Image 1 (cartoon, rainbow, N blue to C red):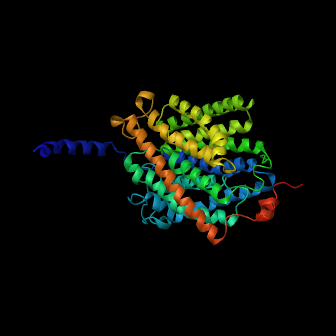
Image 2 (cartoon, one colour):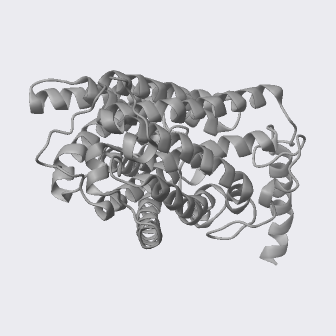
Image 3 (cartoon, rainbow, N blue to C red):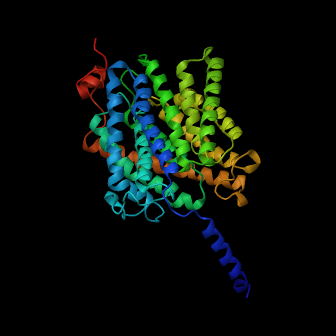
Length: 431
């Protein structure tokens, strides 16, 4: 009797929800914003990330870093279109999607995918840039000593078995999505995922020749600053574009991307000045990236003041990650992929569960009426632990496969000569 009495109310609620749901139609404003956001994310990768990493390398390895980022971006873009998009965003499995859209089958200029007001092709392109930058981020951990062929084979395996399932698990309706995990633009999928893969790779390739005995000084902090600036600009597409439309959610993510990054720049610089006596340009740029990373999962869920707190903490935590923690781990993570992206992603993912609370200026997450800070923090923590284990296991297996098939590392002679010449037969600068 109770069930029968409640049935009309349930039906009425379902009808109201259906009426409130947006009717799929292509909106020119939303489409224009998503096209722009996609271009901004590409700007983050080439040239942004490539120059950021390239400046940190020694001059004899500058081109090798640029080539790795450029070609990995190209490789992943193709794999995403062939099968990555289908496995990530079609089907309803817990870990993988379906094969319905292999080779983009059934997608037309007029079809609409996950975003109700944007052509599916635009959504595919936007999400493809996320897949590409995640893989490119890993390059910074094993830079200056890996075979070029090993980079490409590893990326193909890791993309298939780590990035694609994580994208489905978090954003495609998979396991963590069903659990209610909040990840607005990639704290787990992008940053923790790549940070763990980089850390595993740094261990498995071993330290660079001369590490700890020779000074490994960045050859051009000017280029690193240019790269960091392009990353910040491009990140507005990364975060604000993840709103999926030109709306208030995009505006919230936009301002949070400004404020968290600025806060992290300041706290890193302050911490460095207190610790070393001077604040460096490299520190300011690294702090900015740490702030960008930490606010990524939170950008559309927290208020501006929450973003400032997240960014400020990220500057200090990531500074410790590339100094104290790195020494404790005794690892040669060349460009601090784990210290910045791994730690920043972990911090941001967990704090999203705190500052998404409406009492702290947030949106209340996905279900504002039933939001519980304690419960959400636990969900966020579980999503972090899941990502660490998933990426760690897959990365270890992928590196092992590559090492067995073609070998991971160049010879000591090739490494001393520099990968620009030994792997690519050219140099960044004519002398």
